Image (cartoon, rainbow, N blue to C red):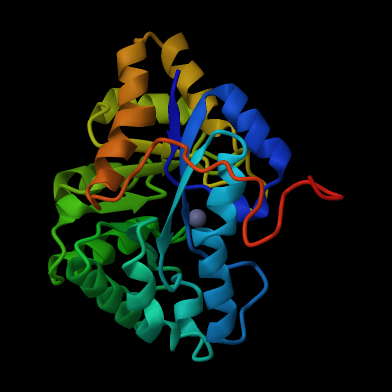
Length: 282
Ligand SMILES: [Zn+2]
């Protein structure tokens, strides 16, 4: 079984996670730029983070046989902080990098005017750079958030067919599907979407354009949730081809819209800019 986790924040995870993910079948990940819990106080903090998503993290993933790409953006939450919004002007120099396969995560957190501005500006940047966009939907007021998101995309130059709307659930999936976007589901422990609810959604809407991710980060989350959904699909009577469609071919097709997806894990050099993941040297 081959698995592509299309939304996971590996910066927050350990090498043990990479090892367990590989053992579970994970061969590719996309790491969206997001907030760190601790608020950032200047654009420079974003730039070091973006550089690490483009350099150190793919290096680390390659040591464990996993292809790593990223998406770059000013995240919805920090779009509200005037100390952070100058990042928008610097995004074009990151969006041209080979390893960037979408603009994201963009979208709404609290649905403020500042978030409107950042979302519209970054949808324009995605269109300008011929990249798809990964759009986060708010964890509160989900249906209102989805509708406003779809409206803003429709007013942008980016077609909904090049947008993955993430963190969907039972209340938002139907309108999202009707819009023509790609459908993302984050499967978490304890809260929000779980494996059984995911199976029920797959039965309701089918597997086309559905992507499942763990959205694992620094909070309570599980980087093996993609495999657990695959196993739940098989137990529910789906065949291996259905599992491969949802857990591999759909994410490959969506991020492949960038023209930049490379799934061979190349360059397992021992060091990145002189640093290795080993302790005490190689
Ligand atoms: Zn995320």
